Image (cartoon, rainbow, N blue to C red; front, side, top):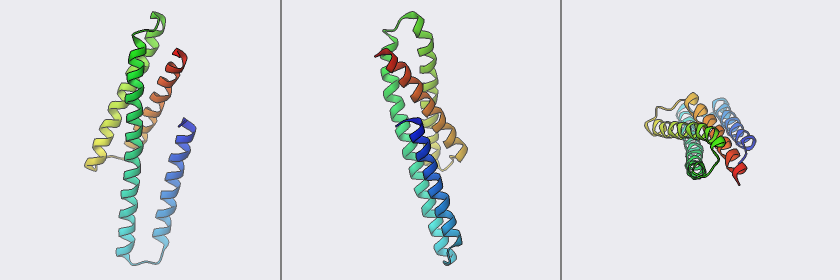
Length: 135
C-alpha cells in the first residue's frame, strides 16, 4: 500500500469516526445508550489503530530482514545510506512495539499513534527505495 493510499485510508477512518461520533451525540437516545455507543466506537477505533500499527510493524520486520541481507552485499559507497535507513527503521519498529504495548495498557495517545504511524510509513518507504534500487 502506498503512502498516499495509507494516508487516504487513515483520513477516511478518522472521518468515519468523527461522523459516527457526531451522529451519536446529536441523536435522540437515552444517555446510557449514547455512552455505550461512544464506548463501542472507542473500542473499534482502538482495534483499528492496533491493526494498523501491527501491520506496519510486520512490514518493518520483513523489510529490515531483507535490508540487513542486502547490507552484506552492497558496495562500500552505498553502505552508509543503507545503514542510516536501517537505524531509522529499527527505531520506528521499536516505537511501533512501544505504542502497541501502550494500546494494550490503555496509555496510548493520539499523538503517539500518529507519530508511530508516520515514522513507520517513512521507514517502510525508505527501505523499499533501497531494496528496489538493489534489485
